[in-house]
Amino acid sequence: MSANMEMKMKNLEMKNLENFDFIIEPNRTTSAFLKELIRYRELFYFLAWRDILVRYKQTTIGIAWSVIRPFLTMVVFSVVFGRLAKLPNEGVPYPILVFSAMLPWQYFANAMQESSNSLVAESRLISKVYFPRLIVPTSSVIVSAVDFLISLTLLGILMLWYGFTPSPGIVFLPFFFLLATLTALGVGFWLSALNVKYRDFRYIVPFLVQFGLYVSPVGFSSSIVPERWRALYSLNPMVGVIDGFRWCVQGTGFFYLPGFILSIAASVLLFWSGVKFFRRTERFFADFI
Image (cartoon, rainbow, N blue to C red; front, side, top):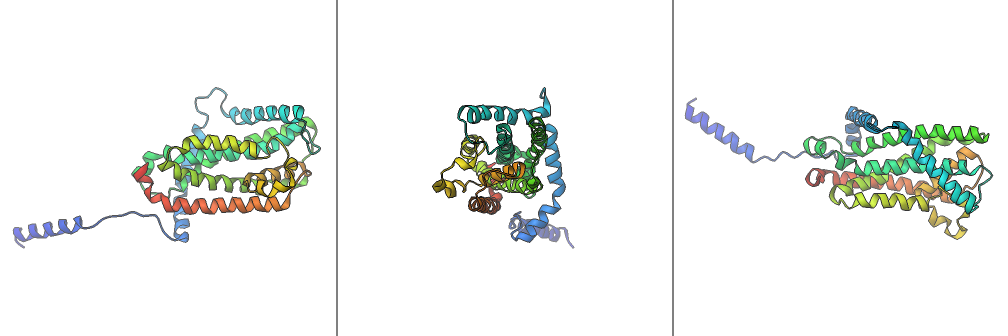
């Protein structure tokens, strides 16, 4: 083959290559998407472990922060709602009533905040390589789960202090923990995807946490909510989670079954719609981040 002919063929190949666009897209089908998540599980472990290691790095009291914040909030709520307002305590010491609700709320609030900021925090990684983006907000929840487990020991200490025996229903605690995780992930998927394009959400999320604390039954029992408002009140998915936690720990107290079903439905809807919205928008993350 002559040199002239080889040059012509190379020019033709270069021209053909220029006409191709290489587009990397996330998998479309749900089964392929789940398989891809499993294939990238080591990245999930790595991100979660890294977040745990740096969580309290360069702090003086380290992991004790995971206990101090809910403990101080519990003290304030017990004084304000228990001593001053004299709200009903369902027959249990008010600090236990508050702390058994503070645990799931603190877990939900921390997990939601971590996951909503996770994509922006990982902007360098996201803009350079492809991997299932859903791994980022999901792995960020693990740190909050570790904090939850540490705070759970404080609840045990409080029970010993007041001589309070937990009910047999405490075996159902993992179910309500999973329900809180489902809710936090659902909200986190929505907010993390929106935060990529609209950075206003970094200011909206702290407001949502503060607002949610006062419309959820953390400092008080759901029994004080008037009956005509209970269905609307139960659309808050954390109402079912918190009432469920209290029921598991105390074994008695207020439990509104229709409201509990509504809260579960709201949690599942949040999670399902969050995953759908996240998958629909993730292809644009690298452009905006």
